[in-house]
Figure 1 (cartoon, one colour):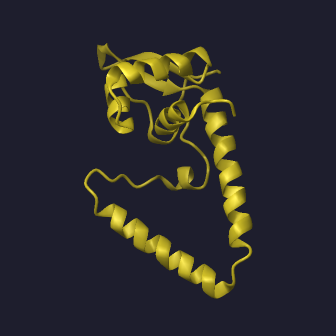
Figure 2: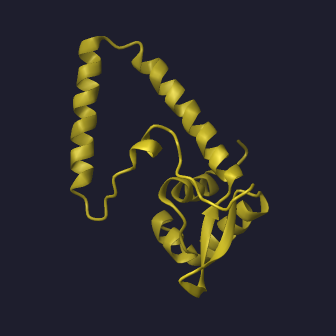
Length: 136
């Protein structure tokens, strides 16, 4: 892919979680705002994100993934899903049942965490949400 891990992580938040302000994105990534500014500048230079004024408050800018940014994340997700599917194909039906039980337990535990947001089904199935008005 050629995109450094910190940039991929920030791009992932935008692609699968929706547009954010720089401050929101910095908080999600647990970095200081100046660090996030540099990350977003690099993503912009690569055509993976764009900044837009918030229509409800023209003082605020939100960072949006571009179509190219969504494609980068989609390809990465497809590779990870294919690798996981190949590993799961080697398991017996009993082992697969245990994996399903474990996944349900993890999801249940996560749902009890403050601020937990369930990932929409289309994102879990590998289709990032679309951002209208983006021709890149």
